[in-house]
Image 1 (cartoon, helix red, strand yellow):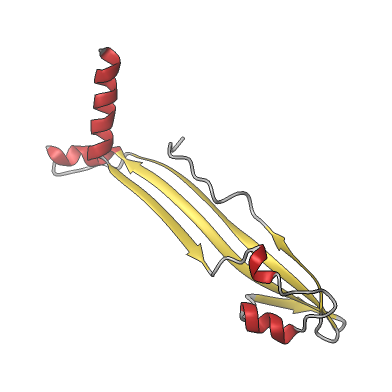
Image 2 (cartoon, rainbow, N blue to C red; image 1 turned 180 degrees about the vertical axis):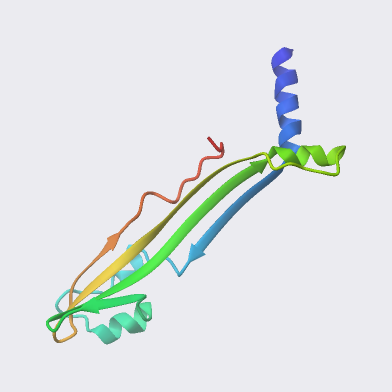
Length: 136
C-alpha cells in the first residue's frame, strides 16, 4: 500500500512539473546510404557536390583536397520541479534536473590533384542518438 502511495505521489509530481524534451539537428545528417555513389578513383568532385551540396570546410594543398561535411545531432531532457510552486506561489524558483548529449559528426572526402575521389569516411562523435529518460 505504501509503494502505491509513493508511486502516485511521484506521478503527480511529474505531471505538475515542467518537462522539456528537445532535439536539435544542424545540417542534414549524412549516412552510409547517402554516399554509396562514391567510388574511389572514379567519382569526380562535381558529382560529390551535386549529390551532397557544398562542404562546410575545405582544406588541402597542391596535390590533394579535403571536403568536410559537418552535421550535428543534440538531444536535451529537462524537468523543472520548481514549476510545482506555481500552484500556490507567484514565484517559481528554478529547480531543474537535466541531461543532454551533443556532438558533431563529420563526413570527409579526399580528392587527388585531378579532383577525383581518393577516399572518404565518417568521423563520429560519441553516440548522440540515445538520451536517458532519467536526468542523472
